[in-house]
Length: 340
Image (tube, rainbow, N blue to C red; front, side):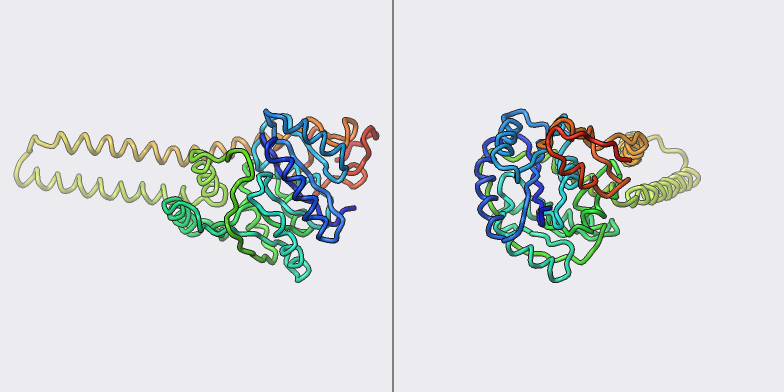
């Protein structure tokens, strides 16, 4: 059994894969430990899956999973964690913006009693506006949620087996990994590193995707937006009551005055917009409840390096911590047993 498993989600990474494999072979060989790499194809539309087959055939230490479609990075990462059997599990991106050479610095920290060792990138070369917005976001979200998220911290980390098993017991459908990593706790160490540019290809993160990811972070880990909505409703009611009282007093003292059309229109449109925002907040929570009640698998597997007979349709999350070793490492063509 490998002492270290490296999980790498891949989506349209045909340009990055050759260099990734070359660097991982060199860096992991220097660690002096047994290792495996779990490459997870997240429904790529280029030659990524074909290349993963070739890589795995040439070196069995590079195993792969292929999801039936694009389920997103969260699901791909979870599939890799479920399939990994190492005593320690590292997660990094395929574009080499997470430098594998840092593993040599991160691994010894686990021997010091830490269960999570996180690589946190600095924002030295980031645009000023993006850096300011990011820091503002983290300040706001840390005031709202019960756990603390570190600015600059992503998925690049090394986890102990107890930490991985803890993550795999969380069976929720709406997953925000940054929050889940922080939620499970365990002693954590942080190592800073300078920004690294992509080796090849283009980023998969648009501003819209980042915005939606930010909303997930706020909604997934607290109900404070609902409480804020309640207080806004109370405040608006008090203001409206005060305004109505003022109008009644003015009418009683000075008579009825006809002007007020602009005020009326502004009030109607303003309160209408506010109601839509509050309904949107409630809708976000209802949508998540709806998704959770369906209890659909978080991903489906199309194929793996273990072969068709040893590749389950999906992997159990939230029921058992991981698949039994006999299934995880069954040779291609081996007969598969059903596990509850």
